[in-house]
Each structure stands twice: as C-alpha cells, then as structure tokens.
Length: 477
Image (cartoon, rainbow, N blue to C red):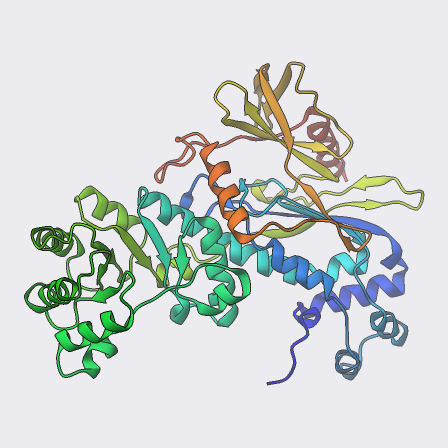
C-alpha cells in the first residue's frame, strides 16, 4: 500500500481555494474558524468532545511531499508559485479547544482556529473528520454506560467498524465516554485503553466436547477466566459444564458470557444455577447487538448481568451515525490587525452562524456545583464571577437570569500558539476520569434519554448586538 500523507486527506476544493487565496494575496491574512454542531445525536441532551489528540498529531506532522506536489501539478490548474509555497508549508497559527471529555452543547465553539487563510482552510477536512467521529462514538458510549447503571461496559466493535481507524480511534473514544475496556488490541498498544478477551465459539467447536474446551481454557488461564456458554445449549450444557470445570479447578473468581437468546431470562437462570453451586463470585457478561435501549430494558426486567459487551451499535453509533460538526469562518483580520466579524446568513435560521472570535464561559452554581449555562462572549470580554452577572436567551431576549453565587470557567484552552503545541496532553485514563467528573456536574434533567432539558447556550449582550448589526446589514443590502 502506498504511503498515506494525511495532509492530502483533504477535500479538493480546499486546494482550489488555497490556490485562489495565494493568487489574490489573502494567504497572509489571519482568519478565524469555529467548529461547532447544531444537534446532539439520538436527540440527547449533550455530546462528549473527543479527537483532540489525533488532531494534535496531525498538525505536528503537517507537510507536503514532493510526490504530493507532483500530483497537484498533474491536475494542471495550480499556480507554480503556490506549489512552491506548499513545499515549505507548516502550520503557524493558533488553535483553541475544549479538553477531550468535556460535555458540549449545540451552537458553541468546541474548537477555534486562528491562522493564515491557506493554513486554516487546508486543515478543515481532517479537523472535522477526527472531531466528528470520536465525539460521535464518545457520546454514544456515554449513553450506553449511563443506561448500564454502574455495570461495566466493554467495547466489542472492531470487526463491524467502518475501517481500521474507525475501530482503533473509535475504541479510544468509547473509553473516553465511559467504557471500561475494549477488545481492540491495537488501541491498547497505542493509547493504553485496557484490552481483554477470552474465546469465540470456534474455540469450543475445536474440541471433542464443550467440557474439554472449558477445562483446557481454565488450565491455560486460571486467573478470572470467562467461559462462553451458548455454543450448544446454554442451560442444558453450557452453564453446567462451566460450573463443573470451575469447581473441579477450584476457581471462584470467574465469569460466563451469554451471547444469544433471551438475555434477561438466561441471566436470571444462570445466576440461580451459579449461586446454588456456590459460585457467588462468578459474574455474568452479556453481548449480542446491544445498545442503550436494550440495556435499559434489561435493567428494567431485573436481568442479572454484571458486564455488557457492546459492539456494532456502539462503534458505528448505528441509531444516529453522523455527528454534524461544521467548520465556519467567523472573523478575518484587516490590514491594520483589527478583527472583523463575519456571519453566514441562511433562510434556515438554524444555519445562521454566531460571528466573531469568541471565548466560551461555563457557569457553575457554587452551592450545588452544577453547570448552569454556557455563554459565548467576544474574545476580549471578561466575566467577573465576584459580581452579579445577567445572562439571556438569544432566542427569547426577554428571558434573563442573574447569577450571583457562581464560578465562571473558560472552556476553550490554548492548544497551539504560532504553530507550536502548548497543550500538555493528559493520559487516556485522566481524560476518562475528567469526562466522568464533568458529566456529574450536569443536572439529571439534561442527562435524560427522552426529552432532555435544553441546556442554555447564550450570547453575551455585546456579541448579540454584533450579530444583530451584521444581520441588519445583510437584510438591507
């Protein structure tokens, strides 16, 4: 397979625009782009940001090879000086982002790029694909983990993922979202996400009997073995043979896995059989096309499941398989260095953008510790949380709320400055712990699966006025 330079993983129109910027003299002008999304998958109340680490690696390695330049020249439409410019291309701008694992909401920037126009344009595709994919999977994983109500969830989806990176990075995102581990060995090797696994039905079929297959496996792996009990008949042979082997070898810390049939019914029967055999420490794992809805139903039915293995419906987020993050120009710098806000106007009101270089504040109630609202402010606005602060809903400006006993926290943190990474990337375990902590700060009403409460993302009065003026200019033009 030919070497793949990720700099070329780019929509072709990014190159035509970049060439145009170069010829028009715009390529030295700093511009500002926001990444944001308009709706949460599965009609949820929030999403979980992920994918920043892979974006950092991409920006650090960003360059074009002679082979890339030769390919672009073969198209016959690019200026020679522009292609020479690409030979020395490196990212020299600034990037601000929410940390991975942060709960995020529609219409607020989760990442902002400030860079010369060509640089900002050429990274668009990769920025979106890595943030959209991993945020989608982290969000889905968190829904499934919350449905499990404290039972462990393992990611089992590699063989059903959309391609190798979908499996590898998807398992990473699932861990950020709350999964306890993965079946993907490479994700463990690369990122430290705990990988584990036991056997497939083929292991059992390889032996002359189910009992011999179980016995051999437990002899090889006596430390907390898990036996797959549904190859032939779960209740008549699978569980009895597992019990026989566990007792013969004196293994008390063990598990069985149910991969087919009526999981609720079988898990209850299994629990009774295991307890009556004195194997009260033996846990039950369930798999087979699970998702948050099926897991919620199993919990409501009193299923005796300790661990859930979730595959295709997690790694593809099959019920809502697209995360609609977008990359929109919000400001440009003028010749004298001033920042000029830009807005995209649409007949569809939901597609009208929030202009300007912005910062995002999240406000926390000091008594409960819970998150109250997010506010989008102009980049140089400062919120003093020692004084009362009024926020309002930009869609209903008569609705205001004055915060008095609160803490304000900026969500966007510097990741790159002048092309240099200034972000100290946490470990995957630290990211997952941070995610758990931050989701605990959301009200239960926001975390509902059905009709969640809308968490307010407001515009500051100054930003709202800038947006109103820009809309009036376009309306009158």
